[in-house]
Image (cartoon, rainbow, N blue to C red; front, side, top):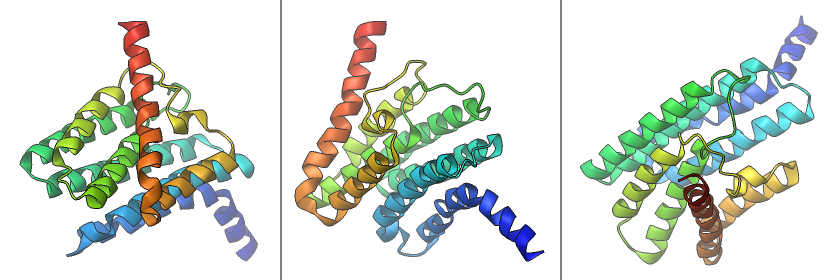
Length: 219
C-alpha cells in the first residue's frame, strides 16, 4: 500500500506543483492580502514553469496534466488580474475584467492539448507585465492605474490573436536552465531594484516587438 501510494504521488508530481502555484493565492483574501501580491506572483510563475520542466524531465507528460495546467493558469491569472484591477479603482477594475475574460477565452480554446497552438501571448506574460508595473510604480512613486489599464486592454487582444508571438522572451526560452534564469530575473527585479528597469524593459520590449511584427506582416 505505501509503495502504491508513493507511485501515485510520483506520477502526479507535476500536477501537485501546478496546484501549489494556486493554493497560496488564498492569502489575497486576507485583510492585508494585497501586501502579499508580489511574492505570490513570483511563486505562481515559478510553479507554472516548474511543473512543465518536471513533467518533461521525469517523463510524466499527460493530457490530464496539460489540462490541469491550463485550469490552474485560468484560476490564478484571472484572480491576480482582478485583484490588481479592483485595487486601483473602477475603470482599472473594468479593464481587468476584460483581461480576465480574454484569459478564460484563451484557456478554454486550449483545453484540448492536441488542438492548442502556440499563438497569441501567454497569460503569464500579462501577469509579469502587471508585476513589473507595480514594482516600477513603487520605485518611482507614481500611480500605476493608467499603465495597468493599457496593459490589460493590450493583452486582452494579444491573448487571443491567431498569430504566433515568438519574440516574447519566455516563448524563446526552452531549456530548464534558461527557464530558471527567467525566474531569477523576476526575483532580482523584486529584491534588487537597481535591476528592475532593465529587466522590465527587456520583457516589455520583446512583447511590443512581437506585436509590431504581427502588425507589419499580417495587416
